[in-house]
Image (tube, rainbow, N blue to C red; front, side):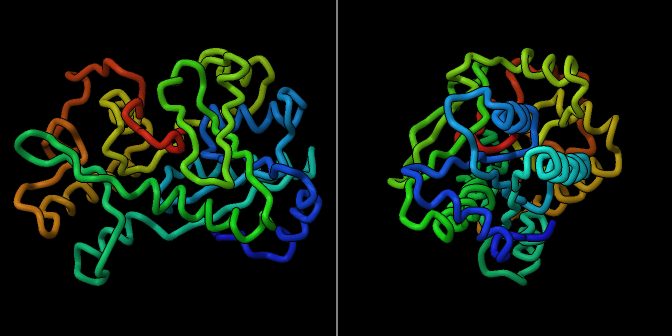
Length: 278
């Protein structure tokens, strides 16, 4: 998707925010929670109103996410004259494959699973591809103001909330504040006959549950094959003595029977930055 963060049109949209003590910004993943948060916020459901939303594009979301974000951009612009900005640090799949081929000297590491004990590589991808481009854009437009960053974590995932590590950013969790759970959010989309988003998460995220892979393999076989090809490519990661895998089962993705491994925990429950899969 195109990075439209530096356009004159976007800069003009923020000019009305500059005299406020806080700029209210929605971190939009285009999943159920953040999309619900955006749509209900524009109807005045919370004690603040958002000034704009930012979608950090990793370059490897499922096609249905890109379709939804384009629909959502048009919907909120037409109905509310509200802007969703897309920012990007590149395509994490292409960047990783180029690193493996020796075409790049560095890439942000994914939390790949190591053969043997299944330990994880230290993760850098969320910071480099989700958080860093968002913060970079905020720095260009905040004009010295603080930012209230809206994060769409629902009550059933309350363990994911955390304070901001950046002085000018205050994390805000309106779904927690209003005690909204994921089942209530899903019901809202259906009761209001609103287009419902799917799960927003990178195709190649090692935190996907077996249930996610099972459904994804059945419903989106072409994109599942993309994930399998990536999994095949990362087997011998540079400077590691052990093989790496996307799955906790430490087997090639295409060989796993996911129906034999029921998931005990919610999807992405281990994701620790609170910005993926929302």
